[in-house]
Length: 409
Image 1 (spheres, helix red, strand yellow):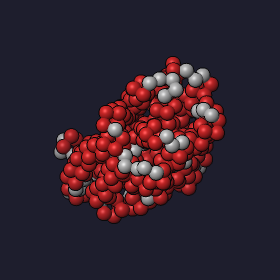
Image 2 (spheres, helix red, strand yellow):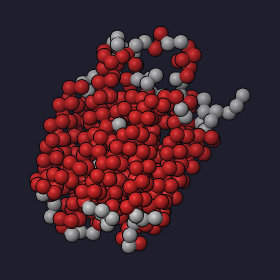
Image 3 (tube, helix red, strand yellow):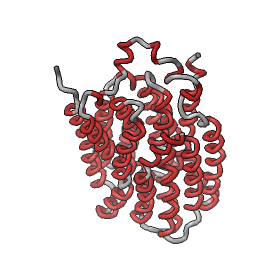
Image 4 (spheres, one colour):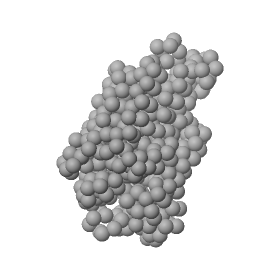
Protein backbone atom coordinates (compact mmCIF):
# COMPACT_ATOMS: atom_id res chain seq x y z
CA UNK A 1 0.00 0.00 0.00
CA UNK A 2 1.27 3.46 -0.91
CA UNK A 3 1.79 5.70 2.12
CA UNK A 4 -0.63 8.37 0.89
CA UNK A 5 -3.40 5.76 0.48
CA UNK A 6 -3.28 4.65 4.12
CA UNK A 7 -6.53 5.65 5.83
CA UNK A 8 -4.59 6.85 8.87
CA UNK A 9 -3.38 9.86 6.87
CA UNK A 10 -6.99 10.67 5.98
CA UNK A 11 -7.74 10.61 9.69
CA UNK A 12 -4.86 13.04 10.21
CA UNK A 13 -6.23 15.32 7.47
CA UNK A 14 -9.70 15.25 9.03
CA UNK A 15 -8.26 16.05 12.45
CA UNK A 16 -6.33 18.95 10.87
CA UNK A 17 -9.59 20.52 9.67
CA UNK A 18 -11.33 19.74 12.97
CA UNK A 19 -8.47 21.44 14.85
CA UNK A 20 -8.70 24.52 12.62
CA UNK A 21 -12.40 24.95 13.39
CA UNK A 22 -12.07 24.01 17.06
CA UNK A 23 -9.24 26.43 17.84
CA UNK A 24 -11.08 29.15 15.89
CA UNK A 25 -14.14 28.82 18.10
CA UNK A 26 -12.34 27.67 21.26
CA UNK A 27 -8.90 28.82 22.38
CA UNK A 28 -8.46 31.70 19.92
CA UNK A 29 -12.15 32.49 19.70
CA UNK A 30 -12.14 33.17 23.44
CA UNK A 31 -10.12 36.34 22.85
CA UNK A 32 -12.84 37.55 20.48
CA UNK A 33 -15.63 36.68 22.93
CA UNK A 34 -13.79 38.51 25.73
CA UNK A 35 -13.43 41.68 23.69
CA UNK A 36 -16.84 41.57 21.96
CA UNK A 37 -18.96 40.69 25.00
CA UNK A 38 -17.34 43.31 27.24
CA UNK A 39 -17.77 45.94 24.50
CA UNK A 40 -21.39 44.93 23.87
CA UNK A 41 -22.54 44.84 27.49
CA UNK A 42 -19.97 46.93 29.38
CA UNK A 43 -19.17 44.10 31.80
CA UNK A 44 -15.80 43.86 33.59
CA UNK A 45 -13.03 41.94 31.84
CA UNK A 46 -12.54 39.77 34.94
CA UNK A 47 -16.25 38.80 34.90
CA UNK A 48 -16.19 37.60 31.31
CA UNK A 49 -12.76 35.98 31.77
CA UNK A 50 -14.14 34.00 34.73
CA UNK A 51 -16.97 32.70 32.55
CA UNK A 52 -14.44 31.69 29.90
CA UNK A 53 -12.55 29.82 32.60
CA UNK A 54 -15.66 27.65 33.05
CA UNK A 55 -15.16 26.46 29.50
CA UNK A 56 -11.69 25.15 30.39
CA UNK A 57 -12.82 23.71 33.74
CA UNK A 58 -15.63 21.82 32.02
CA UNK A 59 -13.14 20.44 29.54
CA UNK A 60 -10.76 19.45 32.34
CA UNK A 61 -13.45 17.50 34.16
CA UNK A 62 -14.18 15.49 31.00
CA UNK A 63 -10.64 14.58 29.89
CA UNK A 64 -10.51 11.02 31.24
CA UNK A 65 -14.08 10.38 30.15
CA UNK A 66 -13.37 11.56 26.61
CA UNK A 67 -10.19 9.46 26.32
CA UNK A 68 -11.96 6.40 27.72
CA UNK A 69 -15.02 6.79 25.48
CA UNK A 70 -12.86 7.17 22.36
CA UNK A 71 -10.93 4.05 23.34
CA UNK A 72 -14.18 2.15 23.96
CA UNK A 73 -16.55 3.48 21.28
CA UNK A 74 -14.26 5.06 18.72
CA UNK A 75 -13.94 8.76 17.91
CA UNK A 76 -16.99 9.29 15.69
CA UNK A 77 -19.80 9.45 18.26
CA UNK A 78 -17.68 11.30 20.82
CA UNK A 79 -16.48 13.99 18.43
CA UNK A 80 -19.92 14.39 16.85
CA UNK A 81 -21.49 15.16 20.24
CA UNK A 82 -18.65 17.59 20.95
CA UNK A 83 -19.17 19.40 17.64
CA UNK A 84 -22.87 19.90 18.34
CA UNK A 85 -22.18 21.20 21.85
CA UNK A 86 -19.49 23.63 20.73
CA UNK A 87 -21.61 25.08 17.92
CA UNK A 88 -24.63 25.50 20.21
CA UNK A 89 -22.50 27.17 22.90
CA UNK A 90 -20.96 29.68 20.47
CA UNK A 91 -24.36 30.60 19.05
CA UNK A 92 -25.80 31.11 22.54
CA UNK A 93 -22.98 33.48 23.60
CA UNK A 94 -24.49 36.01 21.24
CA UNK A 95 -27.88 35.76 22.95
CA UNK A 96 -26.90 36.49 26.56
CA UNK A 97 -28.28 39.50 28.43
CA UNK A 98 -26.92 38.80 31.95
CA UNK A 99 -23.41 37.72 33.05
CA UNK A 100 -24.61 34.50 34.70
CA UNK A 101 -25.93 33.25 31.35
CA UNK A 102 -22.40 33.19 29.97
CA UNK A 103 -21.48 30.34 32.30
CA UNK A 104 -24.02 27.98 30.73
CA UNK A 105 -22.86 28.93 27.25
CA UNK A 106 -19.25 28.16 28.08
CA UNK A 107 -20.20 24.80 29.60
CA UNK A 108 -21.36 23.78 26.12
CA UNK A 109 -18.20 25.21 24.56
CA UNK A 110 -16.15 23.31 27.17
CA UNK A 111 -17.78 19.99 26.25
CA UNK A 112 -16.89 20.66 22.64
CA UNK A 113 -13.33 21.65 23.53
CA UNK A 114 -12.84 18.50 25.61
CA UNK A 115 -13.72 16.25 22.68
CA UNK A 116 -12.33 18.22 19.73
CA UNK A 117 -9.01 19.55 21.04
CA UNK A 118 -5.69 17.93 21.97
CA UNK A 119 -6.89 14.91 23.94
CA UNK A 120 -9.66 13.91 21.53
CA UNK A 121 -7.60 14.41 18.39
CA UNK A 122 -4.50 12.71 19.83
CA UNK A 123 -6.54 9.70 20.96
CA UNK A 124 -8.10 9.57 17.48
CA UNK A 125 -4.74 9.57 15.68
CA UNK A 126 -2.64 7.49 18.14
CA UNK A 127 -3.90 4.00 17.14
CA UNK A 128 -2.96 4.51 13.48
CA UNK A 129 0.79 5.14 13.74
CA UNK A 130 3.98 3.89 15.36
CA UNK A 131 6.99 5.01 13.29
CA UNK A 132 5.28 8.32 12.48
CA UNK A 133 3.66 8.86 15.87
CA UNK A 134 5.11 12.32 16.45
CA UNK A 135 4.66 13.55 12.89
CA UNK A 136 1.06 12.36 12.65
CA UNK A 137 0.01 14.07 15.89
CA UNK A 138 1.86 17.25 14.98
CA UNK A 139 0.24 17.45 11.56
CA UNK A 140 -3.21 16.75 13.01
CA UNK A 141 -2.98 19.54 15.58
CA UNK A 142 -1.32 21.88 13.08
CA UNK A 143 -4.81 22.93 12.09
CA UNK A 144 -4.85 24.95 15.32
CA UNK A 145 -2.52 27.46 13.66
CA UNK A 146 -4.92 27.83 10.76
CA UNK A 147 -7.59 28.60 13.34
CA UNK A 148 -5.50 31.48 14.65
CA UNK A 149 -4.60 32.78 11.18
CA UNK A 150 -8.08 32.63 9.67
CA UNK A 151 -10.54 32.02 12.48
CA UNK A 152 -9.89 35.10 14.63
CA UNK A 153 -10.05 37.63 11.77
CA UNK A 154 -13.16 35.89 10.43
CA UNK A 155 -14.86 35.99 13.84
CA UNK A 156 -13.93 39.64 14.37
CA UNK A 157 -15.25 40.49 10.89
CA UNK A 158 -18.49 38.57 11.45
CA UNK A 159 -19.13 40.27 14.80
CA UNK A 160 -18.26 43.76 13.52
CA UNK A 161 -20.42 43.49 10.39
CA UNK A 162 -23.34 41.35 11.60
CA UNK A 163 -23.34 42.19 15.30
CA UNK A 164 -22.62 39.88 18.22
CA UNK A 165 -25.76 37.75 17.98
CA UNK A 166 -25.93 37.19 14.23
CA UNK A 167 -22.17 37.03 13.81
CA UNK A 168 -21.68 34.22 16.32
CA UNK A 169 -24.77 32.43 15.01
CA UNK A 170 -23.33 32.46 11.50
CA UNK A 171 -19.95 31.21 12.76
CA UNK A 172 -21.62 28.33 14.63
CA UNK A 173 -23.62 27.31 11.56
CA UNK A 174 -20.57 27.29 9.29
CA UNK A 175 -18.65 25.23 11.85
CA UNK A 176 -21.42 22.63 12.08
CA UNK A 177 -21.59 22.29 8.29
CA UNK A 178 -17.83 21.64 8.17
CA UNK A 179 -17.42 19.41 11.22
CA UNK A 180 -20.32 16.98 11.22
CA UNK A 181 -19.96 15.48 7.71
CA UNK A 182 -16.20 15.17 8.20
CA UNK A 183 -16.52 13.40 11.55
CA UNK A 184 -19.30 11.07 10.44
CA UNK A 185 -17.60 10.00 7.19
CA UNK A 186 -13.82 9.97 7.70
CA UNK A 187 -13.81 8.80 11.33
CA UNK A 188 -16.06 5.78 10.72
CA UNK A 189 -12.97 3.59 11.28
CA UNK A 190 -11.23 3.96 14.64
CA UNK A 191 -8.13 1.78 14.19
CA UNK A 192 -6.19 0.09 11.34
CA UNK A 193 -7.16 -3.42 12.44
CA UNK A 194 -10.68 -2.72 11.17
CA UNK A 195 -9.18 -2.47 7.68
CA UNK A 196 -6.96 -5.51 8.11
CA UNK A 197 -3.85 -3.37 8.55
CA UNK A 198 -1.17 -2.72 11.13
CA UNK A 199 -0.07 0.73 12.29
CA UNK A 200 1.51 2.93 9.61
CA UNK A 201 -0.37 0.93 6.96
CA UNK A 202 1.91 -2.10 6.97
CA UNK A 203 3.05 -4.93 9.20
CA UNK A 204 5.21 -4.23 12.20
CA UNK A 205 6.60 -7.76 11.78
CA UNK A 206 8.37 -6.60 8.65
CA UNK A 207 10.43 -4.02 10.55
CA UNK A 208 13.95 -4.90 11.65
CA UNK A 209 14.16 -5.85 15.31
CA UNK A 210 16.45 -2.93 16.03
CA UNK A 211 13.87 -0.56 14.59
CA UNK A 212 11.11 -2.11 16.67
CA UNK A 213 13.25 -1.84 19.80
CA UNK A 214 13.68 1.86 19.16
CA UNK A 215 9.91 2.23 19.40
CA UNK A 216 9.54 0.65 22.82
CA UNK A 217 8.17 3.13 25.35
CA UNK A 218 10.79 4.58 27.66
CA UNK A 219 8.54 4.04 30.67
CA UNK A 220 8.74 0.24 30.40
CA UNK A 221 12.15 0.32 32.08
CA UNK A 222 12.08 3.71 33.74
CA UNK A 223 10.08 5.37 36.50
CA UNK A 224 6.73 6.16 34.86
CA UNK A 225 5.20 8.17 37.67
CA UNK A 226 8.03 10.69 37.58
CA UNK A 227 7.88 10.80 33.80
CA UNK A 228 4.12 11.20 33.68
CA UNK A 229 3.55 13.75 36.42
CA UNK A 230 6.59 15.89 35.67
CA UNK A 231 5.33 16.13 32.08
CA UNK A 232 1.78 16.83 33.22
CA UNK A 233 2.94 19.52 35.68
CA UNK A 234 5.26 21.19 33.18
CA UNK A 235 2.69 21.35 30.41
CA UNK A 236 -0.02 22.40 32.87
CA UNK A 237 1.96 25.47 33.96
CA UNK A 238 3.04 26.37 30.44
CA UNK A 239 -0.43 25.97 28.97
CA UNK A 240 -2.08 27.91 31.80
CA UNK A 241 -0.05 30.96 30.83
CA UNK A 242 -0.37 30.23 27.11
CA UNK A 243 -4.17 29.95 27.20
CA UNK A 244 -4.38 33.07 29.33
CA UNK A 245 -2.20 34.95 26.86
CA UNK A 246 -4.25 33.76 23.87
CA UNK A 247 -7.52 34.72 25.57
CA UNK A 248 -6.29 38.23 26.42
CA UNK A 249 -4.20 38.79 23.29
CA UNK A 250 -6.72 41.09 21.61
CA UNK A 251 -7.45 43.00 24.85
CA UNK A 252 -3.69 43.26 25.53
CA UNK A 253 -3.08 44.75 22.08
CA UNK A 254 -6.07 47.11 21.97
CA UNK A 255 -4.49 50.00 23.96
CA UNK A 256 -1.61 50.03 21.46
CA UNK A 257 -3.40 49.38 18.15
CA UNK A 258 -6.79 49.28 16.45
CA UNK A 259 -9.18 46.32 16.52
CA UNK A 260 -8.21 45.50 12.95
CA UNK A 261 -4.49 45.58 13.72
CA UNK A 262 -5.02 43.51 16.88
CA UNK A 263 -6.77 40.88 14.78
CA UNK A 264 -3.89 40.96 12.28
CA UNK A 265 -1.41 40.50 15.14
CA UNK A 266 -3.28 37.43 16.39
CA UNK A 267 -3.33 36.15 12.81
CA UNK A 268 0.41 36.74 12.41
CA UNK A 269 1.01 34.96 15.72
CA UNK A 270 -0.96 32.03 14.34
CA UNK A 271 1.19 32.09 11.21
CA UNK A 272 4.39 31.77 13.23
CA UNK A 273 2.75 28.96 15.21
CA UNK A 274 1.99 27.26 11.90
CA UNK A 275 5.61 27.64 10.80
CA UNK A 276 6.73 26.26 14.15
CA UNK A 277 4.49 23.24 13.72
CA UNK A 278 5.82 22.65 10.19
CA UNK A 279 9.37 22.59 11.55
CA UNK A 280 8.24 20.39 14.43
CA UNK A 281 6.62 17.88 12.05
CA UNK A 282 9.96 17.39 10.29
CA UNK A 283 12.06 16.88 13.42
CA UNK A 284 9.72 15.52 16.10
CA UNK A 285 10.39 11.82 15.51
CA UNK A 286 14.17 12.36 15.73
CA UNK A 287 14.70 14.61 18.75
CA UNK A 288 14.25 14.40 22.56
CA UNK A 289 10.76 15.88 22.66
CA UNK A 290 10.70 16.59 26.40
CA UNK A 291 13.78 18.82 26.17
CA UNK A 292 12.42 20.49 23.03
CA UNK A 293 9.23 21.42 24.90
CA UNK A 294 11.26 22.83 27.80
CA UNK A 295 13.29 24.98 25.41
CA UNK A 296 10.10 26.30 23.80
CA UNK A 297 8.78 27.34 27.22
CA UNK A 298 12.00 29.22 27.96
CA UNK A 299 11.53 31.23 24.74
CA UNK A 300 7.91 31.94 25.71
CA UNK A 301 9.01 33.08 29.16
CA UNK A 302 11.47 35.56 27.66
CA UNK A 303 8.78 36.85 25.27
CA UNK A 304 6.33 37.51 28.10
CA UNK A 305 9.03 39.23 30.15
CA UNK A 306 9.88 41.50 27.20
CA UNK A 307 6.24 42.63 26.91
CA UNK A 308 6.17 43.32 30.66
CA UNK A 309 9.38 45.37 30.67
CA UNK A 310 9.05 47.24 27.37
CA UNK A 311 5.34 47.75 26.56
CA UNK A 312 5.40 49.14 23.01
CA UNK A 313 3.91 48.20 19.66
CA UNK A 314 7.25 47.00 18.32
CA UNK A 315 8.06 44.82 21.32
CA UNK A 316 4.52 43.40 21.45
CA UNK A 317 4.71 42.40 17.78
CA UNK A 318 8.14 40.77 18.00
CA UNK A 319 7.39 39.04 21.31
CA UNK A 320 4.03 37.77 20.00
CA UNK A 321 5.71 36.27 16.93
CA UNK A 322 8.37 34.49 19.00
CA UNK A 323 5.73 33.37 21.48
CA UNK A 324 3.52 32.12 18.65
CA UNK A 325 6.35 30.09 17.09
CA UNK A 326 6.52 28.08 20.32
CA UNK A 327 2.74 27.76 20.83
CA UNK A 328 2.52 24.69 18.61
CA UNK A 329 5.42 23.03 20.40
CA UNK A 330 3.83 23.41 23.83
CA UNK A 331 0.34 22.47 22.63
CA UNK A 332 1.43 19.50 20.53
CA UNK A 333 4.31 17.97 22.47
CA UNK A 334 2.31 17.04 25.59
CA UNK A 335 0.60 14.03 23.99
CA UNK A 336 3.72 13.26 21.94
CA UNK A 337 5.83 12.99 25.11
CA UNK A 338 3.29 10.68 26.74
CA UNK A 339 2.87 8.63 23.55
CA UNK A 340 6.62 8.12 23.23
CA UNK A 341 7.24 7.35 26.89
CA UNK A 342 4.21 5.08 27.47
CA UNK A 343 3.34 3.56 24.09
CA UNK A 344 0.15 3.32 22.03
CA UNK A 345 -1.73 0.74 24.10
CA UNK A 346 -1.67 2.81 27.28
CA UNK A 347 -1.94 6.20 25.58
CA UNK A 348 -5.66 6.94 25.96
CA UNK A 349 -5.95 6.21 29.66
CA UNK A 350 -2.45 7.53 30.52
CA UNK A 351 -2.81 10.81 28.67
CA UNK A 352 -6.39 11.09 29.91
CA UNK A 353 -5.02 11.23 33.46
CA UNK A 354 -2.28 13.72 32.55
CA UNK A 355 -4.70 15.86 30.54
CA UNK A 356 -7.01 16.19 33.55
CA UNK A 357 -4.26 17.93 35.53
CA UNK A 358 -3.18 19.94 32.49
CA UNK A 359 -6.71 21.11 31.72
CA UNK A 360 -7.69 21.95 35.31
CA UNK A 361 -4.53 24.02 35.74
CA UNK A 362 -4.59 25.68 32.33
CA UNK A 363 -8.30 26.46 32.80
CA UNK A 364 -7.28 29.09 35.33
CA UNK A 365 -5.27 31.01 32.74
CA UNK A 366 -7.97 33.41 31.45
CA UNK A 367 -9.20 34.25 34.95
CA UNK A 368 -5.66 34.60 36.35
CA UNK A 369 -4.74 37.07 33.59
CA UNK A 370 -8.03 38.91 34.09
CA UNK A 371 -7.65 39.26 37.86
CA UNK A 372 -4.00 40.30 37.57
CA UNK A 373 -4.94 42.91 34.97
CA UNK A 374 -7.68 44.35 37.18
CA UNK A 375 -5.56 44.17 40.35
CA UNK A 376 -2.51 45.89 38.83
CA UNK A 377 -4.46 48.26 36.58
CA UNK A 378 -2.73 46.89 33.49
CA UNK A 379 -1.14 43.80 32.01
CA UNK A 380 2.54 44.57 32.71
CA UNK A 381 3.11 43.05 36.18
CA UNK A 382 0.92 40.06 35.32
CA UNK A 383 3.01 39.34 32.23
CA UNK A 384 6.15 39.25 34.39
CA UNK A 385 4.48 36.76 36.74
CA UNK A 386 3.36 34.69 33.74
CA UNK A 387 6.96 34.60 32.53
CA UNK A 388 8.07 33.14 35.86
CA UNK A 389 5.34 30.49 35.88
CA UNK A 390 6.21 29.46 32.31
CA UNK A 391 9.88 29.10 33.27
CA UNK A 392 8.85 26.90 36.21
CA UNK A 393 7.00 24.65 33.76
CA UNK A 394 10.16 24.28 31.69
CA UNK A 395 12.11 23.30 34.82
CA UNK A 396 9.52 20.60 35.63
CA UNK A 397 9.98 19.05 32.20
CA UNK A 398 13.76 19.18 32.39
CA UNK A 399 14.01 17.81 35.93
CA UNK A 400 11.47 15.04 35.32
CA UNK A 401 13.35 13.89 32.25
CA UNK A 402 16.59 13.59 34.22
CA UNK A 403 15.07 11.90 37.27
CA UNK A 404 12.89 9.56 35.25
CA UNK A 405 15.69 8.08 33.16
CA UNK A 406 16.31 4.34 33.62
CA UNK A 407 19.26 3.62 35.91
CA UNK A 408 22.56 3.02 34.12
CA UNK A 409 23.86 -0.54 34.04
